[in-house]
Length: 96
Image (cartoon, rainbow, N blue to C red):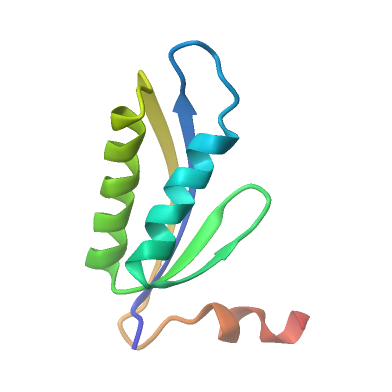
């Protein structure tokens, strides 16, 4: 069972001021490849899983931005850590 929800907005600074959307797409592909449950929203992506694993994914996302030539990256992160269980579905079910 997941013990955390982590929402991340990744803001890469590109070397020549390029559009950041292709970079964000690369970051989301890292989440997708990880196999964790996630949901993309207009301004952030929320992941569900083990807190340690989710932080490792965030690290991979940041490293990837550097590999793609970004000069730096800002990661705005929100964390719900709940050892008894954390679920996106449970938190949002009344809105569906």
